[in-house]
Length: 69
Image (tube, rainbow, N blue to C red; front, side, top):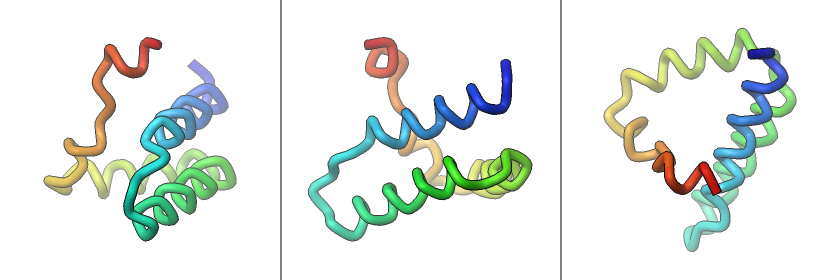
């Protein structure tokens, strides 16, 4: 699995979360998606490790059946 593939998949997952009814959340998701696409992968992995400790992280996951379509 290449880093380009991982970044593309992460960006696609964030795109699947859009649109959201809250303008502030929508803007934050778009900003995060842009940062994912523009950032070096090592920086993203550090961010992921920091966020995985957060109780909110689990609420951002996309069900497997939704990502398979």
